[in-house]
Length: 110
Image (cartoon, rainbow, N blue to C red; front, side):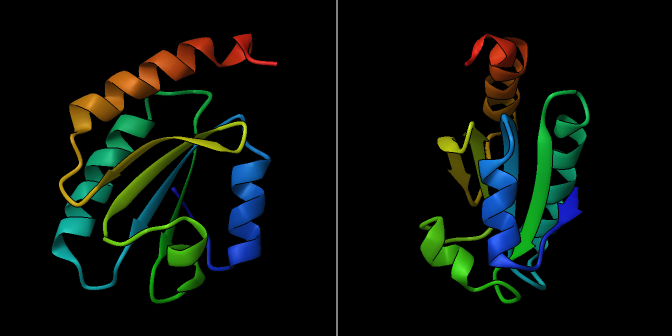
């Protein structure tokens, strides 16, 4: 998962991706580390999914730009539009089901 340390680069990443997942984490957060490992394992199965992660303390603007109030948070975007959000204890089964649907249908989008 790509680490992004600049808000403008992060905005471009989201805007320029057909299907992307953004993982927002806090430093020294055990839950963030655990969920990141689980999300990375899931993300490996989706060939059309681009992934990135960002740390709240390194890029504090991410909280305001993406309306994030907690860490960890997972956001999924399709053509730059947020279509999925999960925070704190992320239901990995729901996330995987959601990504399966979009990964299979992403080529149908204009």
